[in-house]
Image 1 (cartoon, one colour):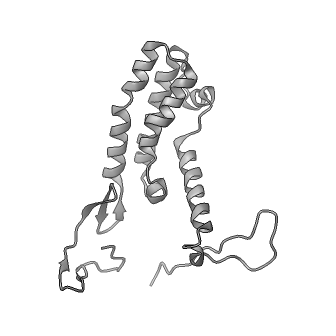
Image 2 (tube, rainbow, N blue to C red):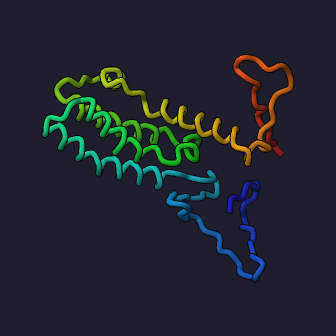
Length: 187
């Protein structure tokens, strides 16, 4: 239950049509995503993201082994993007807007380690320089791109068309803009 009321003294009771009362939980798993609710902060993604980061570090051995075998840098980058980076990017559109700075740094550190392993003795102290050498972008930038792709697909899907309102006016080369939904944030 996501309760947005000011006073959260009680949780609502939800009963199905057979009279079964659903229990309120603070942490649950839905479609493989660990969701934790907090009475003051809403939904927290810390445990889920830490689990994703842990999986990425566990799979870092693949890069280390490939470096030992003398695999080319392009193949190492492909291995990183297809076997490790994907582990810190699942369900990005779901959680990217609400993570803490410490989680952003922890996610980015996965890529820093991977860059260091791939470049080996050619790596520098500068993370941005290492990224430019490997022609990669920061994971924060990738999250923005993935969220925009998700939004564009959602906007185009016929089942979700009614959720969006386009601005009134002429159609320009970049297309009409979507009206941001307004919400009441203060009573």
